[in-house]
Image (tube, rainbow, N blue to C red; front, side, top):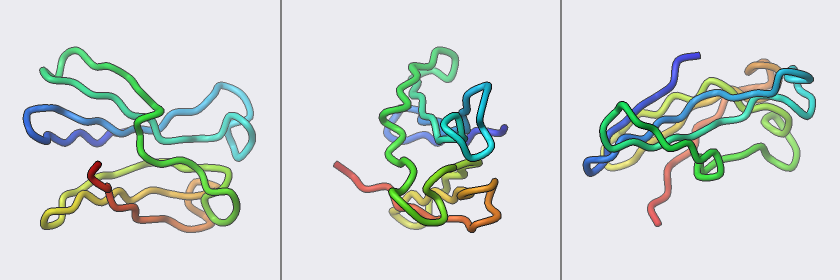
Amino acid sequence: HRPTVIEVDGAYHMWFCRRRVRDFRGGAGAYRIGYARSTDLHHWERDDASAGIDVSESGWDSTMMAYPYVVKVGDDHLMFYNGNDFGQSGFGCAVLESS
């Protein structure tokens, strides 16, 4: 699946889909959003815990999050993504919060 790569202050950030081999259609191995960082676009450090987003406790994105796409709008970075059942339950828009 196509990842999104953006450059911010000389570093590259990539968000992508990840899943387990088994039980990925809404079960324990369901799609989640992964993350990696690079300074040269050739060597990447994967750190899924830093993706900045995870499934909700309940609702339309509680079992699956897939196909992230990150865009810059003004000064904000927005992530659009599909929820449960590959988006059948809806899609979301998250705003990156600066630390």
